[in-house]
Amino acid sequence: MILYQIKYLFTEEDGHDSFDQNRDPGIPTTSHSMPGIISVNEVFTSDVQQAYNIYEVVNRAMQEPEEIHCIELGLSPYPHMDESPLLQKVVETILAYDNIHLLFSSGWDMYSSRVYSTEGILNDSGIASELRYDRTKQLQLQLKELPNSRLHFWLGNTTETSEHQRVFPEADVQYYSVYPIRMCRQHIEKKIPLFVSPNKNTPREKLFVCLNNYNKSHRTEMVRFIKSYEHNGNYLRHKTYFSYLRPSDPELISLADGQHDMNQIGDWQDIIDVNIVNNCYSYIATETHWKDTFAFGFGIERPIKHNTPIYNTSISDKELNGFAVPMSGWISEKSLKSAYYELPLLVVGYSGCLQAFRDLGFKTFPEFYDERYDTVGNDGERIRQIQQNIIRLLKMPLKEVHDLYHSDNVQAKLKYNKELFINMIRHDPYLPLFSGSDSYSSIQEFCNTIHK
Image 1 (tube, rainbow, N blue to C red):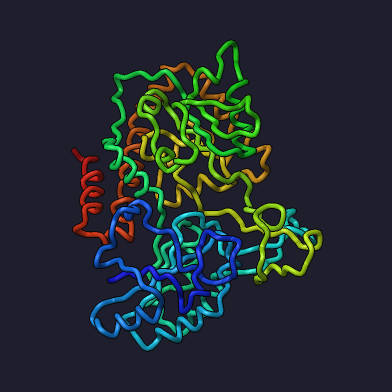
Image 2 (tube, rainbow, N blue to C red):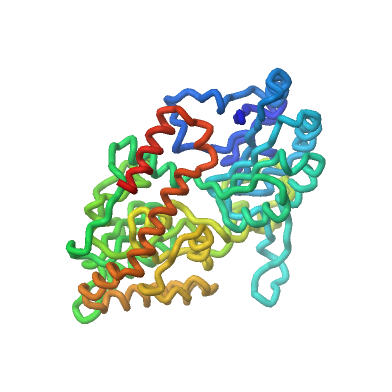
């Protein structure tokens, strides 16, 4: 298969970036895929090529009828922005060419394909229930003439993966996250070997590591809690490696592993100092999102300049309802780090965030934590239960925590999670397209060291 990253669908007016909210609506031609495989200094391989538009791909497909030619398109975190009548024209243009496929890729911030109104009549659950836009349904309608066998969906969300498998049963639907292979690439570029956890004979001094970057309400709450809580002279801050790089309150600025250049976040966000992870027993992941919806709209994100299926720019700010997508099935590198660094996970995120981790196949640790916190919808009660979990571990003798960490059951699950994480790198759907390249060889060599 030859994968094409196209600049435009047809003309210069219809090239869109999946990350750009302040754009005309339309299916994105830029998905920002493969950040851990292609660097700015690398050339594309023979199996990953660039094309000006779809017509150029059609010409190549006609010249090489035995080869599969796959056009990569993106999906936005803001589903309504992907509304595109041109997608129907794409289908009409490629329909006669059985060797042309479409790939819809979203390995970054894919929270949901549905947009709900956040104002109006409340239902019994206390939330507004009006569905304003369903991208998956729109894709189904616009792609109905194209056989499922010519469709690929590589999606960074377990809920969305399941839904697309249901709607497009014969399509190639896979979970795809940019984070595992991006973490791998950072290790390779910095010549950091694959992490190996210390053995049972090495005691650790801390209970937790909790690293925070951008200001978020749940991170602020957790850092305040870590800094202030004590029980019988046992201070939580003395048992925790914690950082908070950009809080709104300067007094909360904390550095666990030194100062970082905020303009070069990609150089350090995927790696933790081994001296830290080797000296603690659990990972507190303060995920990107705490609320069970991702809200956006006027006054929250940048103003929308163009009409979309849910926005009308002739409506004033006060008259415009707010909108949100439900959070489900998504985690970031923050939770995945626990698997790589072989630490039991306590996730401070939206209700169901830990379940998303499980849905990827990872094991969790009821030996350490009462994991019912992940099912609690009320934000205040959920964070209270999370903090009670931390307090319970703080009250345990450190030797008891050490023995629990090194128990056969916990160690088996930690090793299983580590292997699963490495397999996510090995089975990244883009990686086979680079077979024979230096990137491919270095990634495989890094992954294979887990068995050495």
